[in-house]
Image (tube, rainbow, N blue to C red; front, top):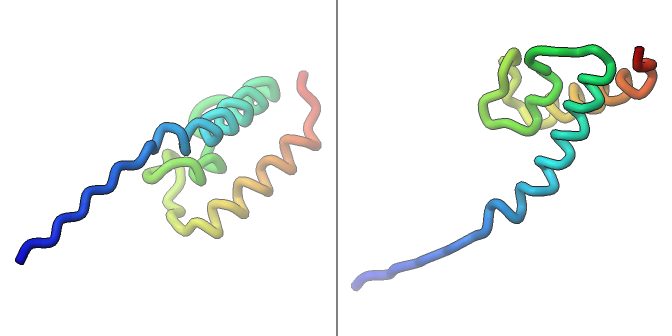
Length: 76
């Protein structure tokens, strides 16, 4: 007996809103004069740069803290 299961998903359709959020966050960081790897954006990646944190909850907290700090800073 053989059981076969074929599943096809459209991952790109699910990722598009995340990419838009990522672009907005990077643009804000750029406007504030930040450059280089942004460890707080590790939430968006499987293997984040400049961060050893892989726990989703902690990545989410870091992202929220960073975005709050960015909101309080004034662009030059």
